[in-house]
Image (cartoon, rainbow, N blue to C red; front, side, top):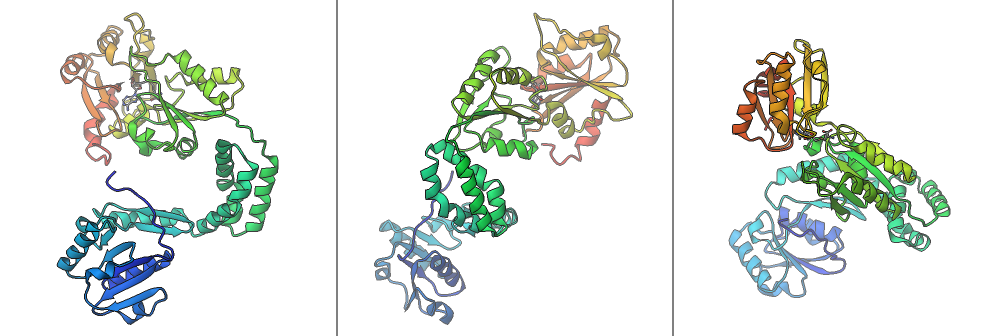
Amino acid sequence: MDYLPAFHNVKGKLCLVVGGGEVGTRKAGVLLEAGALVRVVAPEIEKELAERRGVTPIVARFEPGHFEGAMLVVAATNDREVNKTISALAQAQNLPVNVVDDPELCSFIMPAFLDRSPLMIAFSSGGGSPVLTRMMRGKLETIIPQNYARLGAFAVRFRELVKQRVTNPPKRRIFWENALDGLVAEKVLAGDEVAGEKLLKQMLDEEDNVLHGEVYLVGAGPGDPDLLTFRALRLMQKADVVVYDNLVSKPIVDMTRRDAQRIFVGKERANHTMRQEDINVLLVRLAKEGKRVVRLKGGDPFMFGRGGEEIETLTAEGIPFQVVPGITAALGVAAYAGIPLTHRDYAQSCMFVTGHLKDGTMDLDWDALVRPNQTVVVYMGLHGLVTLCTQLIAHGMPETTPIAIVQQGTTPNQRVITGTLSTLPGIAEREKPQAPTLIIVGGVVTLHEKLTWFHPQNP
Ligand code: SAH
């Protein structure tokens, strides 16, 4: 984090703006909007600015005495030397100072913002890319309509009442989430505060002040956060506790609620931080404490993910849950590595199997795997790669059949290693792909060279 975001309360307080041109006028305008009293110092001050309510114009060159009584300073002159002096003097007095368009001289920067007061959304690129900040602002403008200001005011109005009626703090947060994300919000956003109030009071009457925990079993996709579903994201931001393992990429874990408790339950091959049975019990315990738990799983929860076992325990214990499907590794990898799994020239079917070794062997229906015109995707197969290739050849698959290992698909570390059934084990030995890896067998693999070149996500 390069800067500490914070909001200043400047209501009725004196702020100093040095510079009376266009930029000074703009900055003074923002300060006035926030309720500040503004002393404007410049040899020439635009009339329109000098006459604004709240402005005290001083037509003069800047001198240190102008700091007197000010709580913050904005330097907006067109002379860098003057700006520099102001910045140095202000900082010597620990006065927050902003020099317009000159981050080096600033002790604070003024962010771009979207004003939906009481809701205020401020953002900055630390002065690094004003264009990017403006673009973000534009995007937010479209998804956070003007009426959110109304919703904010509505929430402020009923804050005390709700606090008195819903005494349990976590429960109160859930209450507000339901209100501000449901029918109440819809009414208020549509401009009907009366209906919103009626609904809110109805919700209060039905409120039992008891926490009801639940579990969301969420497929987090293969790695790229852009591949999350909307529902996954919504539940991730709702949950009080996040239970995740190492298949879930860090940027995705970072998208969960900031104040949520995060529990890492590991699971690397042969290095299980927590046994599956213990994870099942953990989910039940957290939910019984009234928590909303998001169980993040790599890819899709039901695809070789033991998600089924987790919900069996939840069902047995009568705990409400939701399952959110995710993009499974095979589909993410196929797209990002340019390997269309059922390209009609090569395959009419596709099989997903696990290559997990049990007692050193792979328990697979080899005759079914070696059928022609078929793509085989092997999850958890790297350690059994030699067995896999040997067995496929032994059961009749040509040794020239193309095969690929895709490392950390859809992430910036994606790497595709290709070969044939006879050459790939040797190549993998040298290249040492990093987990997680997915293996794809079949003619479609040859398309990788041709199709990834044009692929925008190809790292
Ligand atoms: N539920 C997950 C799979 C869990 S099994 C899903 O639907 O994707 C774990 C295996 O998934 C790993 O051993 C690896 O084979 C595969 N895998 C998961 N994410 C991957 C990724 N980003 N790139 C390559 N393989 C991945």
